[in-house]
Figure 1 (spheres, rainbow, N blue to C red):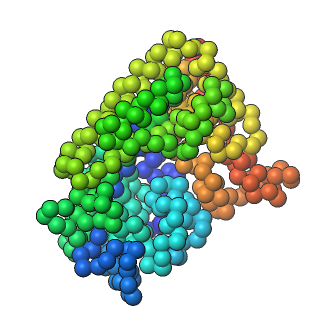
Figure 2: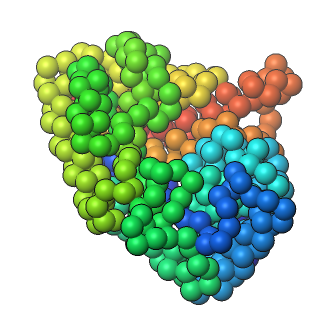
Figure 3: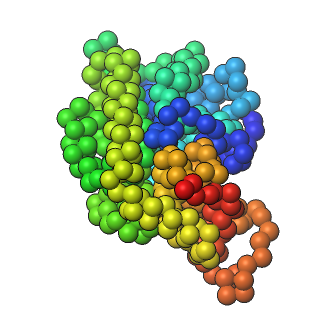
Length: 375
């Protein structure tokens, strides 16, 4: 294995165009596996964790494309590295306390990641821009198949793959789709959608926390997700085959896409002033603000994405807007500040928080430089 642990913004997976990315921001497939003849991570004894990490790292060294992967112990990551991987959805918030034998293997473009000795011995994750469950699954399965040439994973005929969580036993597969639903949020239909998805066995949750459409739109979205970004996630790994589970989440995703696109037309027809207010405020704040907090930035990106997808704004593509959701995160900004040379105003340069907010504002101003309102 070789290469670098963190890909640059230019070649990261989220910078590319995706299918249906007017509504679907990204797709993630995660496979949970455990090595046979070892207890689960929470029950490891003696040198078990060290042996598991060594076995998994060595198996990656034997993959055909092993030069594209870099492995590191989580304990060797500094706080900034851990934070960036958390912001990219690779590590969980508690990964840093997972123990000295936790590890991570990351492909240079970030499209494939594998964690070791955290919730299970192995979590293989694959990411894709837009709606692309099939490709994300195929990529994860290819890594899984390669590892199984060198590792025996715990499984049984009756229960499938054995995992630390009963809900993950079976296929060990979880699929999640991040969607952007500003039109449905504006119409106040999110609660009913969440209930409908729950009835279909799909978890519907906020991507960036609650409080969406408050700061920028003026519409007041109490209880909604920040920026109207949501996650659709499969919940039962033991129900049907991998293809059945894939079909279920794809069906839910397609229904959400149809609903949002229909609601988009309705909002433009029935609430044109509210829509224009949100879009114009988003553009104005991005261009005029000296400091932009993270929550406000997500709302601004959401507003400009909504206007672009409605055909009311032009000058930026969905792929660039998706990349901005990562570029404006705190850890990513700290990385840029640490590795770049910037000259801030005197009253800003001595304040770390203000430097982040100032840099975030500059990034958005540059990104939206060519954005224009279509009358």
